[in-house]
Length: 268
Image (cartoon, rainbow, N blue to C red; front, top):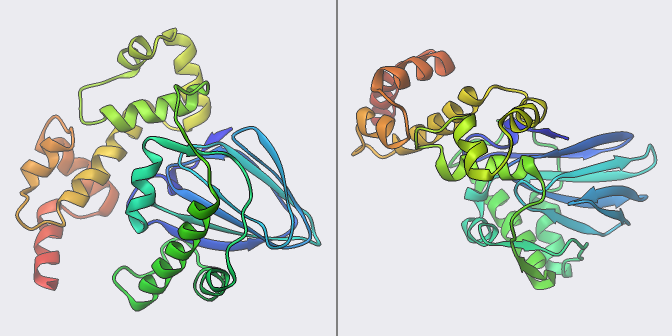
């Protein structure tokens, strides 16, 4: 199993593609993932539940739930990945609830909306923020969410048996604090060496880089508010110094956060 960082980090994540003749190994990420069997049948797993999707079947995968699928040559599976900020009500639900794993079928009018606005290929980064196209995508996602909630049985989340999920949830809750792998191992009740091995195998990046990515994403989101200073955004996001934030920001964007903030204010 592995973590997909491109479907975890950042805001307004959306990508959409129809697959054939593909096996995708077990993985997880922060974004929601929707499946729709368009043709044939698709063998899949979600939270260790084995599924067979038939034409017309939908399934919604919640954040951090491990999943995989196998699409044969004569089958078609549409997969849409979207971050919770597109449907905040669903994101709020996912904080305390997890659905019973089962397929569902939307009503005819919902299917029409989903088909018109979502069922097409759209690569990461293609959807332009604040565009009319983004509004159509949101309409499709709300139709999908409505159909899902009408059929879902939502269960309270218990402590996960999956160490990888515990790791990512711990980081989500604590990344603004001064934490490290040893702190996390102690607080989660795991042997440090064992947790370190699981982390390296699953996350495919070192602990400090992962923490800094979370802090960077939060700081960037805060800087959209022109009343927030670079210093406030950096420190409130967990960076130990503004200098450290400036360095990481420049590594990732080629700009300084002050220059970028000034550019965005000019565009307004």
